[in-house]
Length: 357
Image (cartoon, rainbow, N blue to C red; front, side, top):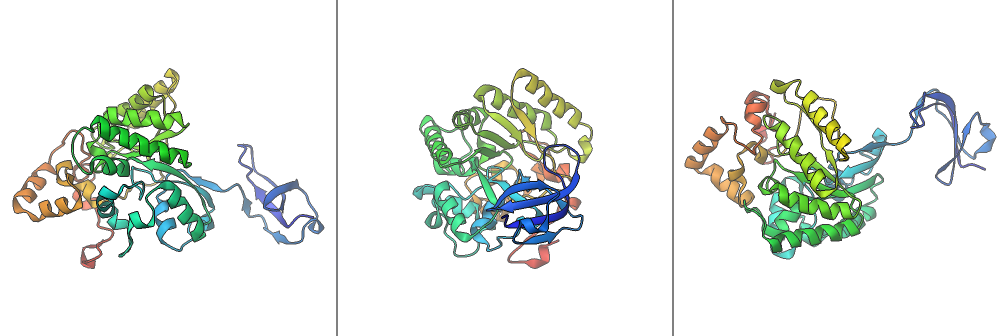
């Protein structure tokens, strides 16, 4: 006897073939039969009346590790049909951390954290993070990347410099530990501090570790506007040198560069013919969301959030920031030029709601 019969469904079975009408019987949480079935074959029957029945959707670029960890909203994605999420993208995550620099990571992740939550006390490793989320009752399956940002913070904070051999070994060791805990790859956010301070060689070394565990490299590239071609070339080169599969996250072309995707996709196709495993994903709308620090030149972010706030409060620094925001600076995605200040909105301002919108 089956536990559940789903009658009169329009079935998209995920095979790539055309849809068809039919019934699906479930037993002990597993599909047991598909076809034209009788109501008596299951203890419960639901008539779908021609509604679509399909496998769960996989959200390949999510940041739900924050909400799964902190917010009791277990149905947020499953009610949209999403059953699996790939999280800790863009080099952003709450782990790993080390005691001596836990405060820097806490400060960096503050926009995502409720008051009173101490990251290092809650979890300092992916294993602890997964245990915490499992106990919260979050129902969607999560596949975790190891985020480059916390790795670099653990090793050298927000210093704008090349990692020393010892610092690189610390990052590689933390990455290996997290991969052994079940992570699926390494993610980077190369427009954000501290990722924007990392050179290509550092990323290649880390990707070699991820590749050794069968992991991938998912990257929010160093540029999605004026320097897009070089950013795609860097991502491909990292895959070539490390042997790691590369996935370019939310690949996009800013409005003034419309048509450039023919070149970027061509670069990926050429790399694939070379034997480099490179893919990308695209979202179906013309907007983005990011942290306000990404709007500022990289030098403003050196040293962490407290230093950023101090610089913004300094009239001399503000003048320099304003001048830099009018320029195209190599290695920095200048959103104020690419999108136009009129198209940039503040979504959340906790202490001054008049700034929102």
